[in-house]
Length: 88
Image 1: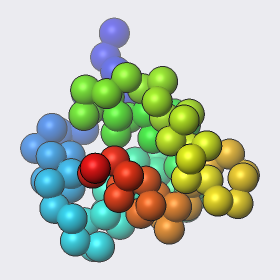
Image 2: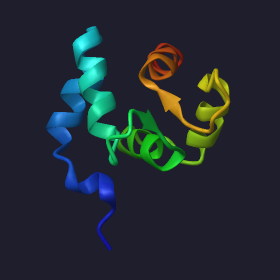
Image 3: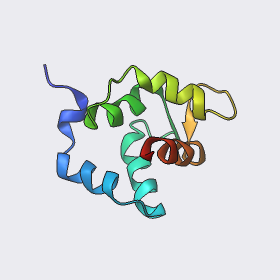
Image 4: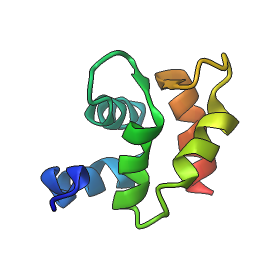
């Protein structure tokens, strides 16, 4: 069975992951936002973690840590905070 993250070219994801400029962060966010609703769900964030070889179960924890408005998803601004935590 093909995992969803396997459908995205690894080079494309690595480009976004290695470039810390704001426009690249936004492009990565939009790439992960599968339903284009302006926020990331646990499943959408899990894709990033899977690509980075991090257990996707940490996506729920990341949502809890970064979800400032407590709606169960993270917006781009909240994602930016996640990216800062993730980079450490």
